[in-house]
Length: 447
Ligand code: BGC
Figure (tube, rainbow, N blue to C red):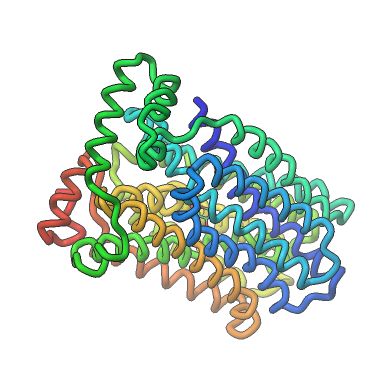
């Protein structure tokens, strides 16, 4: 339960941070007369901080321990939120958003790691999808709170209100037990057994798990050196990196960050922009349940292919609609909303959760921390690249061509999935690892 609650709150913060800026951006731009480039930096400095956070998270979570790393991230999160409220220039706002990002980068690495270390086997898998669900709930809450504060134009409130869940997370994480696996890593055997006994039903269960941990620790965690010397590990690391690039190049976050702007280009007034965005967040959350319900029945590959196809169609249709320009009819406006929702649905049941699931599954035990750190870092860098170029693309290519570009990328990702992504449904992680080490083609390591 503790693990689940923690997953919930860390994911929620991730989502709040992603979602909150879309509604605030227009007001910020007006108050500071920020150029497109300045706006892109306000959006993407958060991702820059997050990438940095993901990079240092591995060391922090080893040195300080998972729990203290989470406490630190919660404290940084609150600090960042408060700095956003007080920021009186674009550059201060950029710094404040980078601090927020640092917090999220640490949390997005440590929280899932911590959960996988304290959760028992039967619940570990579903918690990853629940983590994504909480990200989408965070985004939705941010969109709704943005829509409410928009009536007063209160962008400082929009950015500041996230300090409240931050405070809850801070207090909650102070009460967390240390991760038993980390305690073992640091040679604190008795503490580990003590802690695990409080997390498991019986003392025997805890003792047998401690023996498993001991056995798995004999396999020393290695990172960069393994990457250099083992070509098969290089393949799984590159797959994780590639998957996260693909996830971001679907264009999901241009919708998350700039949805009101897209609705504006499609001809909506301010109210319509804000509530349209909230509906986008709602659909994003609801469609995640499709993944939770069906991923272990339908498998990863078919769901990804279907998702990319739907996203390609959605982006293409949006491109066509936008080519009619702003003074198009009301029907066009609603069509624009419909195709945007189609796109979001395609993402939320496929690439949203499944990329995180796959990234955790494909790494061999020995290089797990390193592999996941690489892919998490890539997620934020790619996220930043997309956020930092969107307005420029709109300005140079025009709205319609920009969306054609993303439609084409999604079509290409269908081929990428067919060529490289393994089907991991119902396959044990040990078996995946064995095939990987035999040099089997990536797409076949699940067979
Ligand atoms: C992605 C985020 C995205 C979110 C949307 C996550 O899986 O990593 O970049 O904003 O999904 O729901």
